[in-house]
Amino acid sequence: MEYTRFYHCASLILSISGLVFPVMVGSIGINYGQIANNLPAPDNVVPLVKSIGATKVKLYDADPRVLKAFANTGVEFIVGLGNEYLSKMRDPEKAQAWVKTNVQAYLPATKITCITIGNEVLTFNDTGLTDNLFPAMQNIHTALVNLGLDKQVSVTTAHSLAILEMSYPPSAGSFRKDLVGCITPLLNFHAKTNSPFLINAYPFFAYKSNPKQISLDFVLFQPNQGIVDSKSNFHYDNMLFAQIDAVHSALASLGYSKLPVHISETGWPSKGDADELGATLENAKKYNGNLFKIICQRKGTPMRPNTDLNIYVFALFNENMKPGPASERNYGLFKPDGTPAYSLGISGTDAVSANTTTTTTTGAPAPPSPDSSSTGYLSISAAVKERCCSCIGQLLFPLLLLSYLAFRLAF
Image 1 (cartoon, one colour):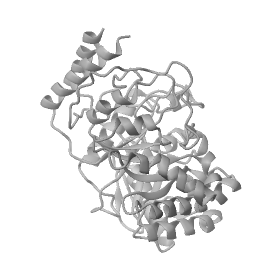
Image 2 (cartoon, rainbow, N blue to C red; image 1 turned 135 degrees about the horizontal axis):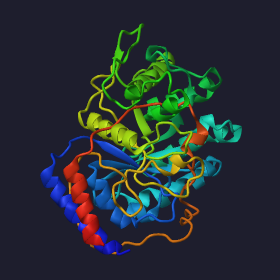
Image 3 (tube, rainbow, N blue to C red; image 1 turned 120 degrees about the horizontal axis):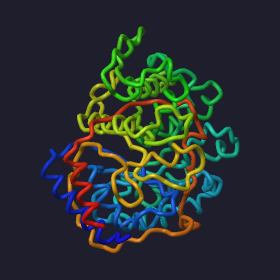
Image 4 (cartoon, helix red, strand yellow; image 1 turned 90 degrees about the horizontal axis):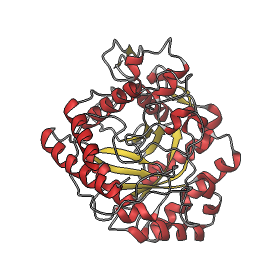
């Protein structure tokens, strides 16, 4: 496969599509996972990120190849420190060494703005991980303070929606009683350091587990009657907003109503196993297309109508080495060869030529460096199955045609 030629042709198509379709304005984030052995080189990922108008990227590690490739692009980065490194970060010296190697070394060329410590730690039912989470967050933040970076780089951790005891109606949202003792110190940390509270929300799982009672239109942002919260009287026409406001209510119940809530993961698979109802290409197009439109409209939730959504879509690529059901390997907006998994009906804000040589990994994914972080977020469905969210947009025929022409030119 002539990757260089393909990406050159693809860049031309991105340039043309930017002229044909209106540029969407908004702060779109994308998760860039790499549990695969066939992904393009990071240098060639830059134009793909720009083609969907994304201005923020979230990693699950601190891959030096990616951080170098995105230098001087203006794209904001969240880097991750994996669950397997939390115990080491209890040592302040190791925490400072990690920050120097994986954050300070790339500033200011690469715009790293946040570090996530672990992923969905509190719902792994692992007391060791849970006990190490808060000390690791504290020590990483202290390292940033010592290096004079705490004003530009925040520290947080991402949670599953399974930390909630109640999520319906949204006004009754509350945290699990057994987790309140662990969550409260984290909330106090967020309040003191001005860092966001991160939630991974997957309406797909809610629909998959109960398709007879949950409206597909409600989870896909399609026209529907919606629901009315009898206590707040707020009307919800999609599940994602209901989930976000349930988190706002849970935070308020502990006295942290002003903490910003960001959605660190949400998405919809374009393919799944026979028993994964709803995992289809059409539903993925609707979910993510509509989600992109809502983000670009700067539309807040009923409980926070004037607050911009901060959402990171999962994920940039299909990842062929992720364990679990077929859906796990099919959340990508792009296939590994750089072609769209489906059209979102949007155009990039910038077209960047990709004349550099593209390479793909041919064996197992490159292991993280000892001072880096994790490739092990692995299965998003394994950690939690109580997730829910929103929907998609319409496929625009002209963009599909242009993509097809790029493919023909490349081959």
